[in-house]
Image (tube, rainbow, N blue to C red; front, side, top):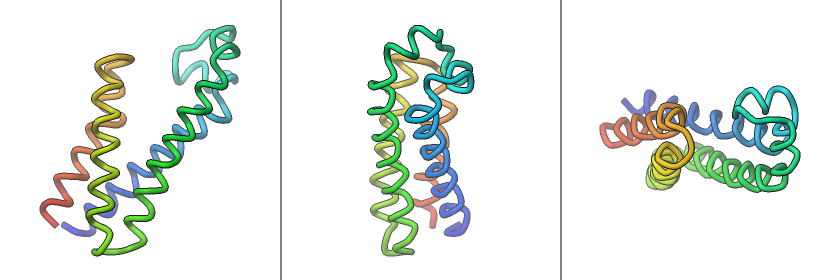
Length: 118
């Protein structure tokens, strides 16, 4: 179960690296427009805000990878950052897009469950 937990934690970290890239680098590109359903005008006007969001997603990814790097001793760190991702995913699903529930919250919940079983 420990290996499965580590794999899911790593995948959640990689998802957040991808979100960082979308929000910080690709927001004002066709890739960012498609991912978030943006018009070019809205993307241009909100680019700075999106970059800020992307930075926070990068911190979540860094925390998850830091917890993995610590091995078994890093499980509390992994749990903390997975909880942060879960809360952010639930809030995003309730306020922005239901899709966030499946992209962010569900993988984080799975990771927490696997950590608890490890």
